[in-house]
Image 1 (cartoon, rainbow, N blue to C red):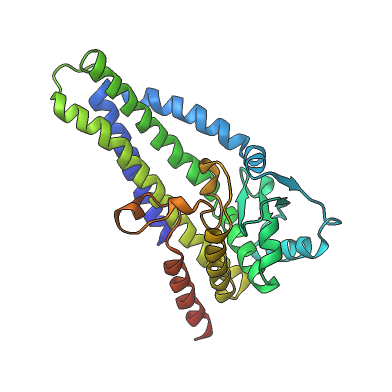
Image 2: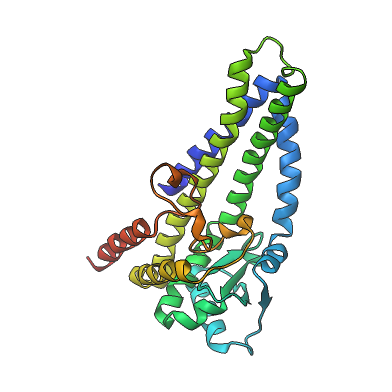
Length: 284
């Protein structure tokens, strides 16, 4: 069901790009900016593991550095049917974790120093299973594709707004007010869809993580603890990398109501509620 939802959202994002691009630049307008955005984002995707590790001030570790942690990652990777990812540890005190890399063979699972200190072994297993689920579903690739299309829409919007300033846009037959409204709203709409894809991916990783570890409540309890600690212990990290973390490390990026459309992560209480339902399903 989550895969269907993400497919629909990606189709909507693509349609938005095509309609907006054709409105501004004719039939070739959307494709030009899609190619530009793809080049930028796929370059970031190819080098994402190294770039993200630098953003989080993380270092790759060996089995000798943390044997118990490594053994847990190996065991859960085998249960998930995945190759063992590279393991890294970030120097941040905020409890958090994330996965990055181009695919299962190049994946990295990173834990902050804070999460290794604050979670119980059972809770840490739940978090690790969640990150392995991201790798299993190739969510890093999905996020890159969504970012590529949303980035193309954003560039189109920027060109359209500058066109209004210096000449009224390429297509003189367009209604100037409608042209301006589309130039402002289309990038916002693309961002909302991109974040909806990110939230859907988190729900899917939660459920698959619960299946991998066989104990969804371990992840649920970990999420509650991580959410509480993320408010108390700040983390300075590039917002572009914040959406990778299991809970948003930037407290200012949370909010109810309409601002929830711009959340990269679902509300923790909704994730916990879904995991409780999954736990009951497993026991019944």
